[in-house]
Every structure is written in C-alpha cells, then in structure tokens.
Image (cartoon, rainbow over all chains, first blue to last red; front, side, top):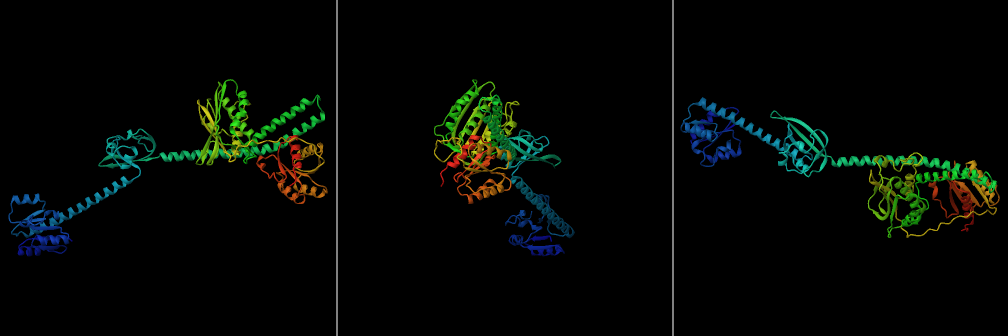
Length: 67
Length: 547
C-alpha cells in the first residue's frame, strides 16, 4: 500500500491535506516538523512526501531520504 | 517528494527539479483535482523508481554472482569478439598463461594458441607450451557476437593418459612373454626327453661300435646334433623359468674379467671393448656362467649394431633403488642392486624394436643369423636372479643395456664347484619310475651297463607295487617329478615311510622344480642329462653318509 507523508508546521494545512488525500488503499502519515517526519520515516517506508519548502534543509530533512 | 511552497514561480519549479522533487504545490492549496493528480502521479513515479531500483539491485547482484562464478572457475575463461580480440578474462586465465588480466585484454586469442574447440597446444608467457582442453561457446551481447573460451590445462591428464598407455603396453608385453615362455617351456620339456633318448642311444651305439669304427663319425654327428638341440632347449628353459636355481654368491667384476678374453676374440678387430671395474662392487647371487652368457649375448648384439666397428663400454656400479620401478625388462623392488651397463655406439633401435626386444624368436638379424633367443635368454636369466633390465636407445646414437642384479647379503665367497665323476655301481638296487617308455628303457640300460640292479615302473602306483614285491633293499629311487596321477614327490614320500634309508634322485625337464630338499638324501637331475651326469649323481647320492 502506498504511503504518503505530509510535513507542515501549520496544523490546519496538515489536517486538510490528510483528509483530502486519504483514500482506500493508501496510508497517510503526518508530521508537524522535521523531527516527527524523520521519526516516521525511520519506522515506515514512505512513497511520497509532501514537504513544506520552509522546513527543508534546516534540520536534516533531506530530499535524498525519499529519492 | 512534492514540495509545498508559498509562491508559484519559475524559480521554485527549477529548484524543485534541481533537488529532485517530483513536483511542487503552491499554498494556499485550492486546486484539489490538481492536488490529487499530482499525488497520484508522484505515487506512481515512486513505485516505478522503486521497481527500477530493485531491478538494478537484482542486476548488480546477478552480475556479482556471475562474476564470482567466473572468477571462482578453476578453468581459464576468456571472452573474445569475432576478430579474436580478448575482452574479458578471469584470474585463472591470468594464472594459467602467466599474463596479467589487463595485458590479456590487449591481446588476441590466437597469440595464446588455436581457439578451436578440442585439445590444443597453447603457449604461456614464458614460451612454455602446454596441452589445453578448449571449449568455446557463442553468445550475443548488445547485438555483437562474442565467444566465451574455457581453457583447461590438460598437462596432467595427458601425462596420466600416456602413463596408462605405457603401463598397458608393458602389461601386454609381460603377458605375451609369459604365454610364450610357458609354451616354450612345454615344448622344451618334451624336446628334452627326445633329445635325451637320441643322445644316449648315440652313446650306446658309439660304445658298441668301439673306437675307430668306420661309422663312428656318423654316430658322433648324431651326438653333436643332439647336444646342440639340448643347448637350444636349455636357453628356452632359461627364458621360461620363474624360480631361481641354485645360485652362487659371485663378484660381477670377476664375471666381466672372465668373459673379457673370450669377448675380444668374438668381437673382432673393429670393435674396441672398454671395461672398467668398480672395486667396491657388492656381490650378487647368480650363476657365474649365466652372467657370462648375459654379457656375451649383450656384447654380441652390441657388435652387430656396429657393422662398421666402434666401441663397447662395460661398467658396473652399486645402485640403491628407493621406490618401485618399472623398466623395459622387468620390475625393480626397492633395494640394493649391482648395475652392469653395456653401452655401444651403434645404430640404435626404433621404438617398435624396443617394444618387442625380449620376446623369444624376435630378431632383427637376417634369417639364419639370429635365433631370436639371445635377449630372451638374457631376460630369463636376469629375471630368475631377481633382477631387471633397462634399455636406452636412440636411432643413430647407440644403445645402453643396464642389467640390475640384486646385491647379496653375504660376503663374496668363491664357490667351489664339484665335478661329479662317473663311477660304477656296486650292485645297488635302483627303482626307476618314468612314464616315458623310451627314456625309462634308456636309463635302465645305462644303469645296468654300469653295475646297478634295476627295477622299473611306469608310474607312481606301479612304483609302489614294485617296491612291495621286492624283498631286498632299494638303495635309490630315480623318479620323474611330473607324472599323471601321483607325482614323483608323493611317491618318494610314500616309499620313504617303509624304506627310510632309500635315496631319491628326481628327474625333471622343468627348471621350475629346481628347488628340492637336497639335504634329505635326495637330489635333482635336469633333463636332458648325459650318461656322466646320471651316473655321477647316482653315485654321489649313494655315497652320501647316512644321517
């Protein structure tokens, strides 16, 4: 089952995106910051991540992780 | 990854592509259909990428696996194109040819040797040639025809095959020799009986005619022919014999010296004989006359190999054989040997001749000049002495015979050979048991004529009966060893119970029976025997002190 990870520091954006993208046959995980995102990514294989650009690079949330 | 960004700008798009994101979204997110599509597409891309990655991983794995298979292969593997240029090799190839893998890949296969399938001669870097088993498989890579050449060093295999072929040859020869020997021995045995009858009758006739009779030369002619026949059959028996006959401890140097004078006469002026003797030479156990015969036969052959003259070198040395050796003429078990070498500078021999060298009746000499028994006799003598013969020969550059005789443990002793002198009987009774009527009749005539009293029997049973009927003493039993039903030994044993003082003289045409318990008042007489030998042996036995 493909798994999405949404990373955004706006709780509302997170919630909307999660609800929008959740459908049968697809998992959606959310994280409000780099730490949470990395923690999830360590645990679960992520197919596609939607990441707020402002959170990139700052705290080790490198794109290469999901290449 | 999909970037979520605040501005939709070209810059953002470029950045997203640069950092490898699949796509980007702009905030605020309002185009939900587009969002869904983009996510769906990203998921699809991710799946494809993942599959691709797995595929690459599998390919890498497969490559490593095949590479290690090829690397681990004991055979040299070379990949070359249709023009023969080497593309890839494994470590075994580099090791086999002694050329680094990188250098091999700059070469053409043909520089190593023929690339055709099968056993080929290939060359190493050192220039050394070796036998290679080559197999070649065609495969296509990116539309290009390539070949995988698998090369196996067949040196050991070729050697093993050769050794086996040689062993098989030797076995064949040995079996042939044995069969011929047995045949020759059998014929010689029958022949000996006939010759004994002929020569003894000639002796009688001569005695009856008296000295100076006009027919004496004819009788003498018969005797001489019979003697020549006997000496031929003796050679045959020497060849066919397996067990050692009573041998003396002799000094081989002495044997060489003894025949040297005789040899210089036989060899003629054009052939020079150089004999060197080794003073520290071990003694051997052999019959000195037979060793002389070996030397003469080998020297005469050497002379015949040098029609224009030349030199014969005789030398001797002590040799220790550490491991079992198979020579052209017989096997050598480990031990101490005296090696007698006879070397000529003659025409040499072909392999075909070498292979049949010791076969009886095999000769390269003109019809009538050689009997084909010379080397067969040498072989028989040496073999019966527990030795073996080696031959080195090259066409055009001479031949060396090496005769190995086992060294004796005892110190050299000069054996005194007693000559039996025929003496008349003093009326002793002799029981003759012999299944051949003419021979029995002949022996009876000889014995009666020389003052013995004789009882006759045609076989063992008959002999027992005669002994039973005879009330007086039987001083000596003269019996053939090989007879139907009861052998001479059995008869001697059974008669010995009732007549413990009776002496036994065995007769045989087979030299294999040579070893007989001679201490026990018995002896052996080889057929054919002369009147002298018969009378001498009978007298000697009868005169032996009783134990």
